[in-house]
Image (cartoon, rainbow, N blue to C red):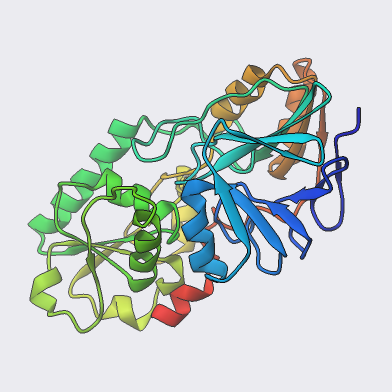
Length: 340
């Protein structure tokens, strides 16, 4: 049964007559999460998870036509049963499950299988076909346990404080920033850039509780932020705003920091492998748990991951999409520039 097809606008559900995370304007878009490469402007109508609604409205516009629903609740669209299941990627992220005449396809969006103590944990969904990302689909990527990662980051901040330095973490304003906040909760007062502050407000408007932070601006007294923690989006790396922070020590938080050579690409003091995507073993465990007969591999290391799946007896094909610009931390939404 052909339930979905891959088009130049995005992933199209044939009987349902809607798209999944389309990258060009369509009439009906079902959205996996709020990152800019998956939820784009110009759609006539959006459907997303409850926790993503305010985020998407903040990013795209409060007046868009949008509806939402919780995890594990089905909505029938032109005979296709649509439901959301936790993806564990960022707050509000969802896998999109489609069922038509007993045939099930699951689109993963972006996901991670490790519990970060903030996002609703990933939940595997059995299906006939599974569409998976492969951002870190190489064996070299193997994330630290959350407590080990947290200790490394805590130790860095404490070391900075002993040298009278302010710890500046650099991470994408949606997802990564909140993850850093959770990892650093209780260590020191935390300040966030305006773009992150605004995203936090959108998130908490849905009833989600985030660690306490203060809004950081260049007008804040330098003594107030000295020895503290500041979290900023990647667009500010090397900016005058960061240069105005007294005695700053900077650290990039990204999965790419797993490879030490990446750290030399940026003029920062440290790098921490904080990723909101599944690592190699996470991807494999997720795919196997679906028991899918066919797996489509999208953005990332498609060739390597798809080839390996076929080698271990899981039929797989590569699919080209327009996703995958967030984890390199080189892309942020327009709100960052406006708020800087």
